[in-house]
Image (cartoon, rainbow, N blue to C red; front, top):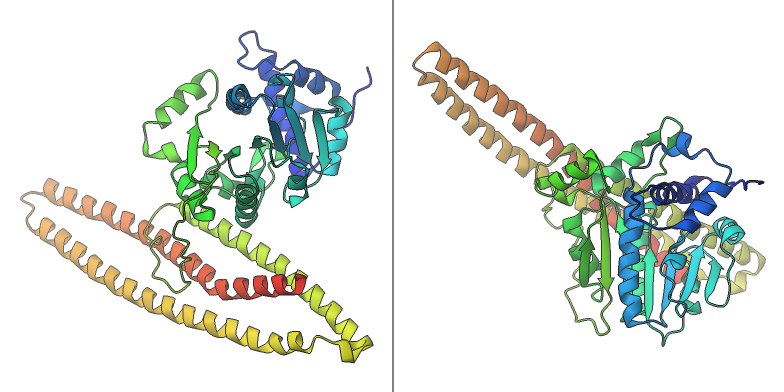
Length: 446
């Protein structure tokens, strides 16, 4: 049998990672996922799965099985409903949950759809659209009168946070009453992928810019759109072995919020109004308390993502203004003089706002330094008193050791706090430029 070469790279190649997980689980004698289509496709593709991905732990297969459960439950209530699977790749979920009445729409990039159609050809009930999930054109293909369930499995973590917000807000606005399931990764794992994380010596995971901890998910979604208020976290974990035992132990520790999450969202039909106040860039920061290196790396990754988005948007604005300049040179009478007149004042206003924000944060830094100096003096005085009251050499040594350990902990915490503070100041100072560029692009595109 002639095998198919996938010709995939980047994020698209990860569809083979999840396929490998599902097919490997389905082949086990005690399999918790019945998926003959995945095993068929897995065997038909010319790809060294083990070399690239190693031995699957089964967590991605359990993720798929948990979404299957949510879909089957929904289909009992909406047997003729429409399921939309964004970034579906070679996922065979449509075949696993098919009730012979539902309709299914697969949305993915053209290369992914071409490979999918080699194994899972479309028909009247199973349609394919070769588009990015970020292209809202796929929403126009949905019957607005039908019940809708949207799946975004293994997708959102590969998008910048702002793109995730726009996508989920767009879905909430277009499909009131629909249901949505998506998975996400914790901040620390996102940060590791941004600096380069290898699954095996022969495969490096693509960057995953959007990371969010479990306890942040519901309030973040509500802030993004008031209709995204009914959020349920679905548990899934490694199905067997020591890894399953360890995952159960993590549930009882402070790290329980720093694990992969699967969110089930019921989009409200008539969302209640909630406060949409956007924090001013000059507001006193509330997130700069000493934390951990993971927090610093997560903040750095967010800033990097924001900077990348700003650069992309600025490039689009420059391209449009260059086009206006060329048009003006051809026909000066038709030139958009108002647009050219805005350019310098807008830049000056953005720079002035950024300067004021930096002055504000500089003042906050001086205040924090003064508080830290007072706290350090108190800690030193307390330690000195404890040493002076020591009744024997052993007690003195213990007091000195206690002071040394506390000092090291304070230095570490202050270093993390300083890093978070500088990153927060950088992000705040860039806010006027992001707002100006975004406004320019929206005006020029209109």
